[in-house]
Image (cartoon, rainbow, N blue to C red):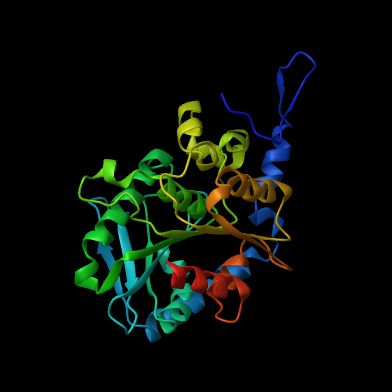
Length: 297
């Protein structure tokens, strides 16, 4: 059994967890951001403009279920790298279309962008969502020639729950998953404000009511508790206004996979949502770090 580093031990070595109010407060990021409806509204508007102004192929089916869809924003240069972005929302909300605003800056920099959807909880478990993302990555790899990107330069990026899923892609044994796939299918990663130890989430009632995490899921789907499958470099990022638990989670994955951890970026005056704005802005150090990472693979 795993225990959160936020817990402590009694003198008899029994585990004492902070009460559920602690976890509900620490992980309910929206409750800590009073203007989050305005941020979401701004994203919807910016994403609508991005889809109008940036050529894209939308709702490409990578699997059989209705949730298994992706949007592809091609760069003008054939054979350029692919950045795959996985959205957050506690595995139970939001949509790839909410994050179209991320694509234009990367496309302008000569990087293809794919935005992934997945079936949302409680309709499926986190385990099934991970499997869907595996299918999406394999689907993209096999269609590199069709969509004119370099299959040897695939980078995964994710935010919040999407950072968890991105980390799971960095831990995947691709050549075992499908024997036509290379072991190093994912060449690098960008992990933003992520969840890498699922143990505390079972104590956060506001979200676990939908996730219904089991101990087996916690042990097998917590990236910080399992090794990377191959030496893919990655960077982490977190906003300085985020809760101490999100900072702990961020530090945990950096420590667990330290041999491939290139950089940790703590962004000033940034919360759990506005970090996505930083990622999308061509002038921001996080965008520049991502672009540099893509260029080095």
